[in-house]
Image (cartoon, rainbow, N blue to C red; front, side):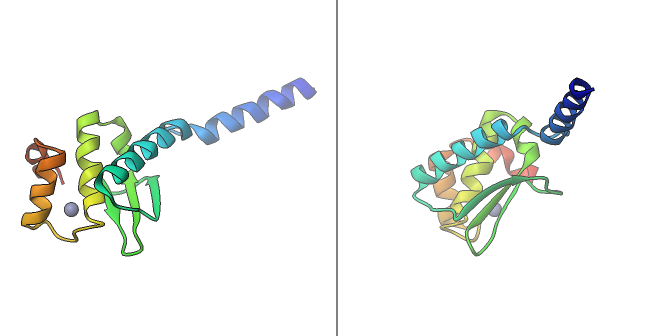
Length: 118
Ligand SMILES: [Zn+2]
């Protein structure tokens, strides 16, 4: 009886941490990667979030909250880098002007191959 109850609790916990999206560990690893890039780019995001998003890979708010789509976690490492650097640079530069593009080229030399994807 008590054994059966414990099994049920375990099952419930499993389905809570693993719906179909990334696990907590995968999110933590991704956020660590974002923090590394924030250091490199000398920006200080107030908060880094990974959550379900519709129609975009990432966004940033005026309060320096940076949010990334869960779907990024199943993309290639080089695409993740593009998305991370792109969004973090917006903490310094709000537009996609000349300065933004030249900084992208420094940190993600082949970034232009992804410009059609967002
Ligand atoms: Zn942008």
